[in-house]
Length: 144
Image (tube, rainbow, N blue to C red; front, side, top):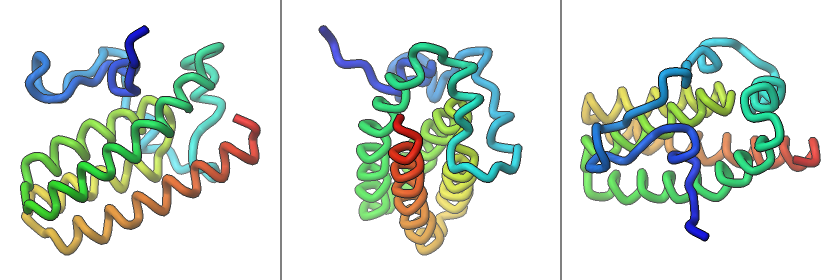
């Protein structure tokens, strides 16, 4: 059975696999704009994915550390284009899953990268890692 990534399930593809950072029509970034007290909007997640919510969370938790590692690698290379592309893809995944704060951090990474502000990129990647830990703890507490 082939391994699926969160990017495939949410409709995002890596550059070079069709158009760059493509998303499904219904993958609205609305959840990035709503303030929320939880690090991930469980109601949104369950509403959107129903019985597949746990599968989506597992893929998210498996894939995001890989994406963050890629961000760090691209930062070392000072490759602003790949940083921006990776942050953009991850931002979309966060919107689809309702991880507003993480999505906002990705937006900031993308913006800083486009400005070639690698100091800000590094700081935001560190915050991204902290937010991922917050999400992991929250989901564990929710038995998800």
